[in-house]
Length: 79
Image 1 (cartoon, rainbow, N blue to C red):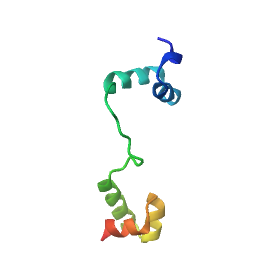
Image 2: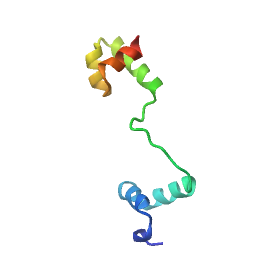
Image 3: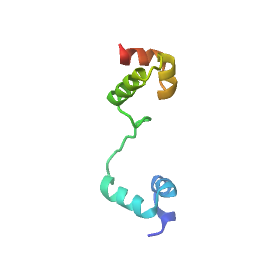
C-alpha cells in the first residue's frame, strides 16, 4: 500500500506521526466521524485548573491569560 494512494487526511496524520500509527488509527476509527475539540482539557478540567491557579494567588486576568480563556469565563468558572 503506497502512502501516496491514501486519502489526504491519512497522509496528513502520517506526516506528523508515523505510517504505522496512522494505520492503527485507521483500523480503530475507520468509518467513524471523530471530533477533536480545540482544547484537550474538558470544561471541568478548566475549572479545576482555574481553581488551582487562584489558590496560587493569580487574579482573574492572569488566570485567563494562563489558560487562554476570557476573564469573563474565569469569572463564570470561579463564581
